[in-house]
Image 1 (cartoon, protein in one colour):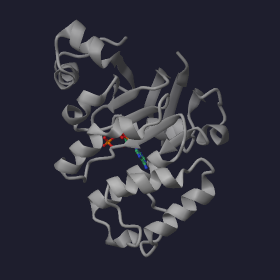
Image 2 (cartoon, protein in one colour):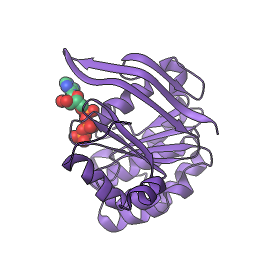
Image 3 (cartoon, helix red, strand yellow):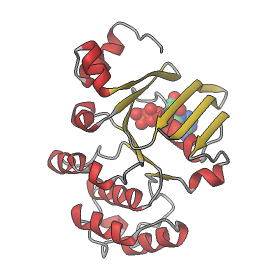
Length: 236
Ligand SMILES: Nc1ncnc2c1ncn2[C@@H]1O[C@H](COP(=O)(O)OP(=O)(O)OP(=O)(O)O)[C@@H](O)[C@H]1O
């Protein structure tokens, strides 16, 4: 099976503080992967390192490319849109994405926007937290790439919409693409995950298949995840 992401011996410091160390991770194509870890564990940082917007030591390969500029064309990351003024209309943000990302698929965006009930005539300032998150999900998944990174995509989204999005997330992820989702609601995403990756103690403490966990430990994903914090974790 093809690998879409390979991270070798990655470490990252910020203001003299070690955030991540000895990170090794390989993700195969076509997987939905949960990125789990406590607040401040380094999940967002790991995503920023993968996209190249943060620079660490080590090697990161995405679809065979290693430089940050090349990697960016293979990864779609849920940007927080901080660069846009509040009065910008969503339609303008979409036009900007079309301009910047040659792989941005407008039809796909429109389908996602319809599914998520996003109104492009609104200004960014008119969006509630949940609406803004839905818009970010639509923008991120509308690109045609091999690797999607969704950083806590559902935190402000009401539970009915969240369930609807999660249950159809496979439908919105191109075949052979891999989706890495960081989330605190492990229980809700557990059913769609093929694998989990746990960031703990400045490194990747666990990378295991969801079915393997269920079969080998007899635990559901959320119970297994909680058990890592009760009795310490065996690094594998
Ligand atoms: N702008 C920043 N300046 C200094 N330190 C930062 C900054 N952003 C993150 N950090 C530090 O990097 C570490 C990892 O943070 P990160 O945001 O990657 O964690 P996270 O796992 O995504 O957390 P959360 O679940 O709360 O979003 C934390 O110790 C945090 O304090």
